[in-house]
Image 1 (cartoon, one colour):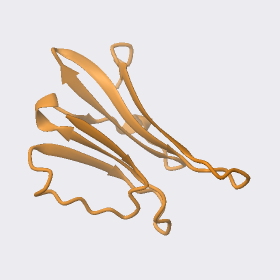
Image 2 (cartoon, rainbow, N blue to C red; image 1 turned 60 degrees about the vertical axis):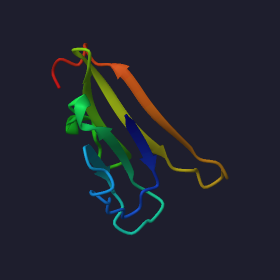
Image 3 (tube, rainbow, N blue to C red; image 1 turned 30 degrees about the horizontal axis):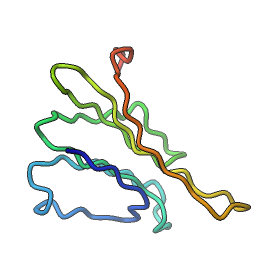
Length: 103
């Protein structure tokens, strides 16, 4: 079980509501309520943060999980709308991370 969230703002997760889950939150902008990302991952997946992929310039959060002995990389990325555009996009990335042995 996992959940990727965007536009978390200054979200303070209810840790009792998410018992048996690990919560990762990145709220880079101290003033914007329309920024921030999070990952909520079931503890049985052994989630671990991957801070080397995070950037102070973007709303991203990364962790690795283990499924059937294989490591996978999970990310939640929020792409802010451009000033000339009225749409925004968000993505959740999952990929095998066997080639990320340096992480």
